[in-house]
Amino acid sequence: MNVAVRGGDDAVASAVGVGGATVVAEDDDPDLVVAVGDEAIQSAVTTPPNVPLLPVTAEGGRHLVARDSLDAAIAAVAAGDRRVDTHPILGLRDGDAVVRALRDVTLVTDAPASISEYAVTVGEERLGSVRADGVVVATPLGSDGYAAAAGGPVVEAGAGVAVVPIAPFSTTASRRVVDPDAPLTVSVERDGAVAVVVDGVRRDVVDRGADLQVERVDSLDVVTPTRTENF
Image (tube, rainbow, N blue to C red):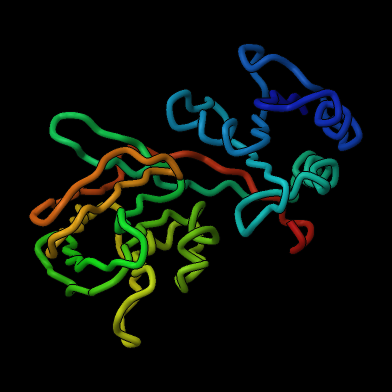
């Protein structure tokens, strides 16, 4: 099996070799692209690979491989113990421009110790509003990150995207999993600056009356080893 590596070093190349694969350049028709670290994984948004991506971080996760398990993950994939899932790439529409998100789009109050009020609409259906520090919309790939820390579910590939309030004022605030193909709008309904953060990068600051539209604009194939649940 031929593997291209984004964001790796000699130790990563060694782990790929121990796993039974050969490291090649990405333009040499690899069977798989291994992306090591957040920056390399994020590169798949602007420069998507032509083959499935194996995302690797230090800790790993539900859809991510832990760095110290990379050799075992490569061995499992090479042996055919794998599955390939299609993950959504979300687009945040800002006028005519679209900012892409692989993991999550977050609206959060810009001032410390303050709250705002947010309404969520999917398609033509208004799901309700919530007073909270913010709202995060997370893909399956990002659902075990900030969204999970805010109390949201870890979402399986293909199951939808999670919409999770951050520190809601109400203890009964709902956490939803919605269809990524249905246009989703998060509206700011209270005065006060709200930061817009896309995959951990602050992109804008908005205020009351802002309607931010999020929907699937692309997809990414992600390979997951299935030999062990520890990946």
